[in-house]
Amino acid sequence: MTPTIVIVPGLGDSGPEHWQSLWTGKFGAARVRQDDPERPTPGTWSARLQEVIDATPGDLVLIGHSCGVLNIVHWARLTGGHPRVKGAMLVGPTDADRAFEAYPTVADMAPVPMQPLPFPALVVASENDPFASFERAQAFAEAWDAEFISAGEAGHINIASGHGDWPDGEVLLSEALHAWTPPDIVRM
Image (cartoon, rainbow, N blue to C red; front, side, top):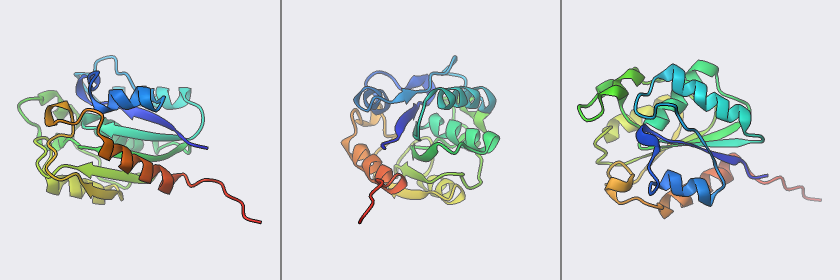
């Protein structure tokens, strides 16, 4: 059975043209909606993610972008994960440890947890993301015991960098789903 996708947006709830919003409708995904999508904190954002997990039946795959990635890794640290979470696709992780002027509230998500995740994960990072160096994204993937894929020079993998529907991301998602949730096939 195919798991339900849970979209975990970053700051601003990933606007209507963002690939996460487009995928929400396209894949019938559940979505985490924060009370204040401009002021992330590990406790409040993790609690909301847990509410969505509790309310969504069946196996789940989390898809986070930017500060949504931080939401997922903080949630995993605080809760130890959940047995129904079969994997997470972590796109364009933001480096809260190196807060930046444009979004100082992201510093509230520091320090970035640096321990293995309790489920398989894939980190997709850009070589020229203004919110996390490529080297830091690689270090995150290593610390989280996650697979790592370069998206090339793709900016922050959002609307501003020209990623609306993001078909390359759909291919990565399909490959990850196949790896994390192989079909139940019985050979006689």
